[in-house]
Length: 415
Ligand SMILES: Nc1ncnc2c1ncn2[C@@H]1O[C@H](COP(=O)(O)OP(=O)(O)OP(=O)(O)O)[C@@H](O)[C@H]1O
Ligand SMILES: [Mg+2]
Image (tube, rainbow, N blue to C red; front, side, top):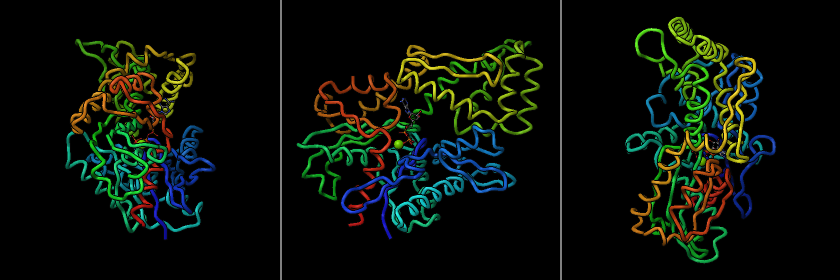
C-alpha cells in the first residue's frame, strides 16, 4: 500500500508518489506526467480520459465530452445528472469515474496499490461561501473514498507549490506563491528555509492564504464572448422591439462546463424560433450549426488555442471554416488584453488582501514564485509582478509544482 499526492485541476491532473527518496510524478498518459481533466463517453462503451478523450471527440466519434469538472464542485450541479449515452449519471459520479481511471493508470504504472492520498484543493472553490467550500471538500473526500482511497487528507494548492519551491531555497526568505490555473487563482505568503523544509508542522510559517475563482477558463469565456460569439449572433438585434437575441445560449457555449446543456431537442427548437425573428438570421444559422453538430467543445478548444498562441507568440487565429466556409477570427495581444484585462486586475487585487492578512507591506516579499498555466498570460504576469517590487521572480514547474508539493506532503504525513 502506498501514499500519493493528487492534483485534480480544472484543466489538468497530476499524481505523484514517493519512490525511494524523491517525490516524483507518475506518467499518466504515455510518457506525459499531466493528463487533461477530460472524459469522453461513447454510447455503450468504456469511457476515454485525457488526451484520448479529446481526440475521440475531435475526430467526431458520437458521445459526450466533459471538461472543467472541478468547476461543479461546491455548486448544486454536483448532485444533478447529465445524460451519458442511454443513462443519466450524477456529476459527482462523472468525477469519480475520471479520478478512478487516473488512479488505475498510476497503479499500473508504479505497480503499487494506492490507499492514501493528499488531495490538493483551491483556497476557495467558491467565492465568499465557506459552506460551499466545505461542501466541495466533503464531496471530493467522498469521491476519493468511493474509488478506494482509505485515507484522504487535503492541502491547499499554493501551500503545496510552496513545498516544491522550498526544495531550491538556500536561505530563509518570505515568498509569495501564485498558482494561476484553469479555474482558480490561489496565493500563499510563506516563510521558507532549508531548515524549515524538514519540519512537518508548518502552521507558523504560513502567513496568508487566499484565492479567487478566476482562472484560464474564464479568460477563454471572455475571449469567446468578445470575438467568436458575435459571429454567431450574440448582440445582434431581433426584428421587433428594441431587443437583442437572447444571451443565454452564447454564455453556455462559451463556458466549458455548460456546453453540454445546449445539446437537446428543445434548445435546438428555441434557436430555430429565434432565427425566424432575428434581423441577422444568417448569424443564428451558425449558432444552430454548432449546437446541432455538438461542436461546442471544438469551438472552445479553438478559442483556448488562440489564447495560448497569443500569449506565447503575440497572435492567434480561431479557425471557423467548419462552421461556415472562410469564417475565422483573429486575435492579437491588444485584443486579448481588451477582453480580459478586468480578470487580470481582479486576480492581482487578491495579493493586496494576502499582504493585509500577513500584516506585511509589499516590499517585504523576497520572491514571487509562479506556477499554473495561466501565468503564461503576459498581462496576468505583469499585473502580478507589479504588486511586489522587490521580489525575485521565480518560474516554477508550470504544470507540476502543485502535484510535486502534494507528494512531498504525502511523504511527510505517511512518515
Ligand atoms: N502558454 C500559455 N499561456 C496562457 N495560458 C495558458 C498557457 N498554457 C496553458 N494555459 C492555460 O492554463 C490553464 C491550465 O492551467 P493549469 O493546468 O495550471 O490549471 P489546473 O491546475 O488544471 O486548474 P486549477 O488549479 O485552477 O483547478 C488553462 O486555462 C490553459 O488554457
Ligand atoms: Mg492547478
